[in-house]
Length: 555
Picture 1: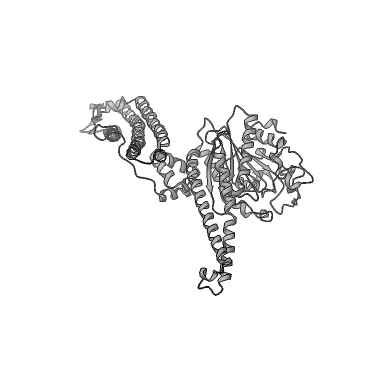
Picture 2: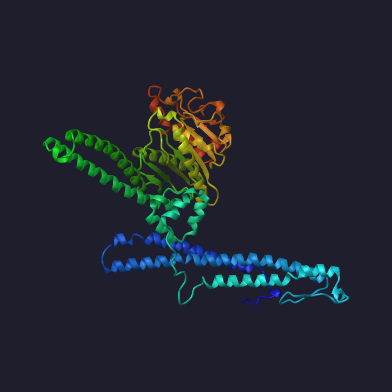
């Protein structure tokens, strides 16, 4: 039990405790960084050295070492927290003690500097009892021994927290292994804000994070609030897994089709459907179903190949796979450069007709925009994100509906909030969100929410953003909204009657800041709709200037 005295409480100085807490905090951070490097540097050992007793021993030793280093983080962190909390708690108790002791001395009371007990002056005694003033004073002074007891309890608690977490020759430092992360725990994060998800993720040890990445990449990869580098690890795993599944599915369909065609040609239809009322019709129905299933697989594999090629290209800036799914039309989020450390982040939202099969074209655009930003702001790091994270309309008639934007807007909003939550640079990045065609409509629905996280919006070839004035996009100020539509863009043929998606953002009465783009080809208005990223189009320079904050130079 603590032997702390009142004198110790009054003499308490917090600075040494804060300094010690900082030392332990730096130790914890160093352990965390080292554990992450060790884990990422050794996790592929089993793949490059898969067989033999020596391999098994090396893999086992690596697992033990990773666990020990990883699990050393939490004890060091807890010691740092205990020291910091002790400093604040004792400062509070010292202030209470100082106030009570000062009051006692003014009233002439004697104070025991060990226990905090007080004795009234002789003058306070009136006929064997205390006078009224002394009784009022004593009611306050009686709390002083309690303050000392609180201080002793705090001292004991801090000593215990340190004792159970510091190294010992018998058990080592952090040798106890924490439990793994379950699917249920991960799924429970889905309803939390990106900031809350980020705080939870950072509370895990590196080994727990690695286990979650390894066992549940499909969940981790789509979780806004988890750092981009970790989502990249998870989504690359999903990408390779989905490639294998789709290739196997395609092979099985093709083999089944070949078998059915041979049966048909050789007159063996009854052998395939012995119990069908009409075996030939049943076989032909299966062939049609297989053809329908097979039709979408080459496109998805083509999209996966385009993503993989870009991720592995050593001659281009590093790319990160921030989201991936092959379900339905597919989803893909690919970042050129790391948004968590960039000075500027430009999120590009594609429009009608976007599918996983066409992801290569979208990635090419973000590469072009990343290069433009580097050309116009070489002293700044700019990351450009291809954000195909929503169900885009499949056709022009579908693009007249709001439902796709209503579904995609909130998802985009959460993604943008997640970029703020995981940012790890020196200051807040400049975040711009650019929508092409129906992608601008998605942004409009997201930016109607006052909490939308963006420093600028850019609408390119927009059919409308479902508001009639920039001031209705409450997530940004009107002077942060930019728009352009080429003179010969086919999108201009949409009647501006506020019927489909509202006022044209490139019209002056919308209130956006309109910037220049090349007029395009009057004989090919459809091509003009996608020409904003053609070489030497003035729109590309303007987009780069907006994304890098050089607004006075925009034409």
